[in-house]
Image (cartoon, rainbow, N blue to C red; front, side, top):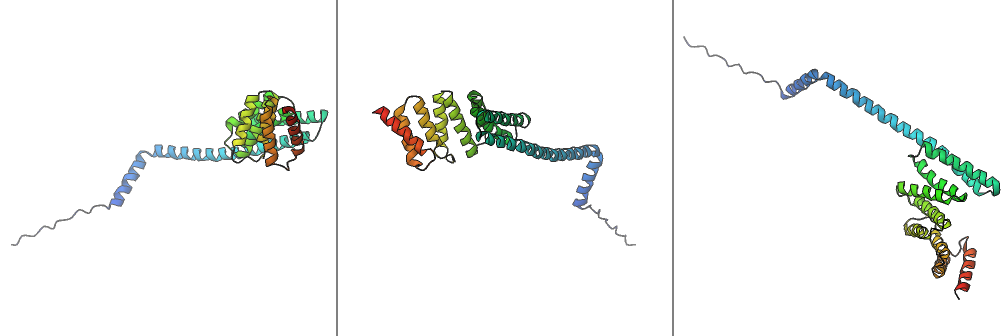
Length: 235
């Protein structure tokens, strides 16, 4: 009798995709607690980020409102005189100080340092004004206009305190900014500082430089008188 040939049965291999899926499923089953915890942590983190951003927007909104109140009161004070002006400056400073205490890290909080410095200078408290301007400049991210305003205020506060070298440094830095919007303030600041130091030739040169660059400036008549006085003095 002829022998029956045995048929070789070929073992069917599972597709690679199903093997991979099975491994993933088994791993998930073994570590389901860990995966669940990770999902919970991710959800909490996402919720925290959403809450943090909403909180930042709310803080900035409140800080912006307080800043607008302080600046508005400061502008009112600059149009007044005597006791009315003093009261308005105090009120403006209180509002700005409240903002600085409650929301110091906001954009409005940083800007409040400039306006607080301006208030303090108008009130004759130049040493405190210097501290505000310096604090802003140490924090400022480099916005040209804000930096210009702070350096101008700082220079004049130093000038009133007779700290001439510091005033010169401030006005020179102000003049060195590429995008300064205060046209001529650095030159005037230098001229007034040189005059305060008794360096009349340098003051005269700076005043003339200002007039040549800004002949139609509001201060031009006053500067012309200063030029005439210094020329007479130096003869």
